[in-house]
Image (cartoon, rainbow, N blue to C red; front, side):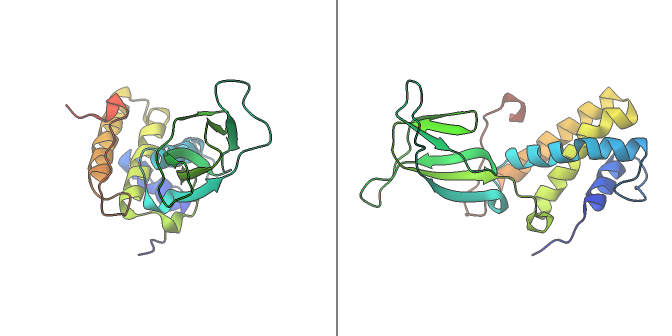
Length: 195
């Protein structure tokens, strides 16, 4: 199902969470308008990075660059321009089998000892019509939390919105955010653990 939504609607929903009125336009030159625009892109990208969303997942086979790493690794690969974070990185042998490999990512490049890399990654999906309803709820909540202090001057409300976001994220990742029938829940960050 395609959800038709605009930047202004996302901004207005975030402002509603802060008890504020809607903007007259996304470009409104007001304190609220400036605060929302200031945190919009950061919040959007951060919410995408927080999960493994099917709408923001791509696959790519990488070939090594001509230059090799200075030391420790044999091969260097340039990551795709829209790369945000890796999900799975595998090598490719002469068979259909592949296995996870040791690697590191530095300065927009992947370094490893394999000459071919099969990469599944989270990319910067900017098409709002691709976003799911669950993700849009998270994005709105993240934007409200980021812009909260600048708009309300309340650290208490900011903490509460951040806590609400973490609960929403936990619930979303406990379900099928990836779209492959297997729930994805990674506790790579201590703040995600609900105790």
